[in-house]
Amino acid sequence: MHQGRRPPSILKVVIFCGGLGTRLREETEFRPKPMVPIGERPILWHIMKTYAHHGHTDFILCLGYKGEVIKEYFRNYQWNTNDITLRLGPQPDIRYHNQHAEEDWSVTLIDTGQRTMTGGRLKRVLPFIEADTFLLTYGDGLIASDINRSIAFHRQQGKLVTITAVHPAGRFGDLEVRGTTVTAFKEKSEVQSAWINGGFFVMNKAIDRYLTGDDCVLEQEPLNRLAAEGQIAAYLHAGFWQCMDTYREQQLLSNLWNSGQAPWKVWTSI
Image 1: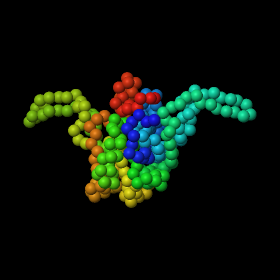
Image 2: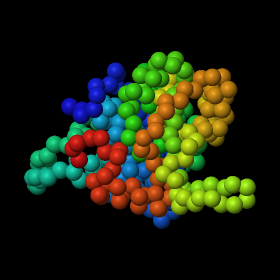
Image 3: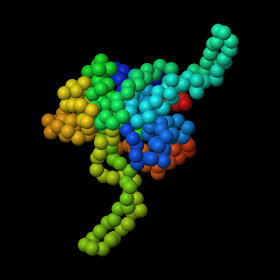
Image 4: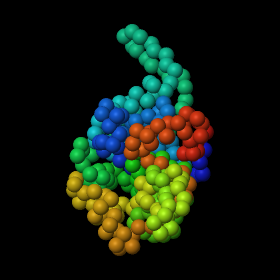
């Protein structure tokens, strides 16, 4: 049973997992960015747990760079998360002793190409989506937002795309200036005032006609064209959101998790 509010309908969740993660090279030289750990689990697991908490447990992972690492992780998931009894001999048998909250997950792993751009990756997996509406996100960001509220908002707005808009954490100190004199200095603001794309989408399959080939970058021509046509709604989320672009941000998220203060952990079981 899911701990979250029962969803109006269970939607497929597409997650981009194929990028190089060059700004996190300390970790991504040996594994894809979604497999970089937050605590003892990859950030991909945290993202999937967030969706599963809200009832959405049918995942499509768009693989690319080092996709075999993600395949191996899920192929051995039962083996690595359970106590096991092995029967050896000519009729070997494996018995798993534990249950875990991920037993109802469905994970489809699609090789979408080593150099394919985000729009191209999405276009490649659309045939695996039957319903008109689906969810989309990146494998490197965490949020404490009600996914089902964003779905209800999307359906109310009647547009092709809903973007969860967030306030990013402030990265630089703020200066208050009067004339040419600094009157106040804040080492670092908690959040910036501008809204940005938080990377958590609700989309209609009609997005397909805005996507071209493997070189298509979703965040460029397709979304710009949709915005010009008035087909993007913004679901405003003022709460916690954090991407993981750098080693410093990976450490920030790990420290939150290890201290038991992770705002995105809305589920109760590990």
